Length: 128
Image 1 (tube, rainbow, N blue to C red):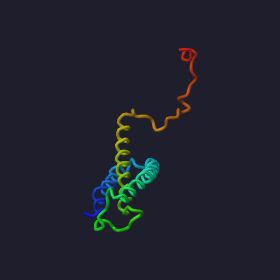
Image 2 (cartoon, helix red, strand yellow):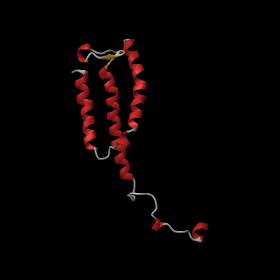
Image 3 (spheres, rainbow, N blue to C red):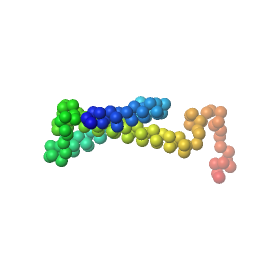
Image 4 (cartoon, helix red, strand yellow):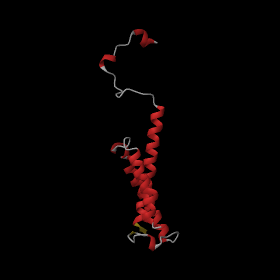
């Protein structure tokens, strides 16, 4: 199996499923923190993996990759960093959203008091 086929079957398809399944809960704003997470993942993982391949700790079968390399790593490895991060991030975001929805009591859409609900406190309420 090629690296690209592996990514398609085991990473891209689950991402597509999660995006479809939780399409109502995912918004651009809720997913924005994943951009920062991707920056951290690439900054931390790229140097380490490049050195590991350079030093011969592991390698990639040329017949199973596209042949496009950035440094010592094939393009598919860089795709794996990002896609795997997205997969785990989407799954965690969906689970967290569902868990928080179960524990929070139902609240009104706005948390700001309406003018009709505001009233002055009586002296006995202040001193209690």
